[in-house]
Length: 228
Image (cartoon, rainbow, N blue to C red; front, side, top):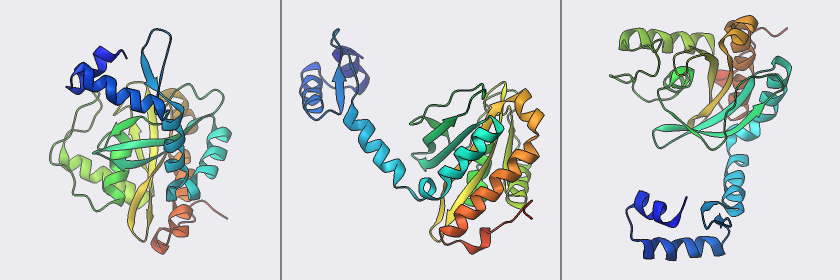
């Protein structure tokens, strides 16, 4: 963005924006191209990466998510709650996954399988009003509550194009002795997810998140679903 655009978006004067951006440039938080437009700098990625790698969910779940994602040719994602959203900490794009997910992106807290997982494994009260993202979004609070309870029983939640047309996913929360830490999710185009079956993908995810939760001090989450 240009200096003028940044000043306008943030509601501060161009002179103040110039002063702040000058300090951010000096610290590497932003960089500037030949057209004098600003973009995120290396220091921002460094601190963001440090935050992600030190979260409990990254330490306990990410390696297994990558292995399963590559095996099934789906996108594996881990995210944590932040500012009424889920913040994407990392995304693994396996060959042939057919979908792109940007780490650092944010997804509304109630969206798709991620929302169901959040309400299934956190202490947050169920929403009284639901946002409509696609024609398939569940808008009835009673039906939504049934889906949340089903997710809690199965160990994973499903999303049948309820957040994004053409794409489906499964999600499962990771908990610790402190409570809800975040979630793991596998995403794919709808035809690919149906080919694999959401149930099979969901069970793999439930096993992984249960092991991660157990290692973080929640013995009630130890599930050996489908294990020999």
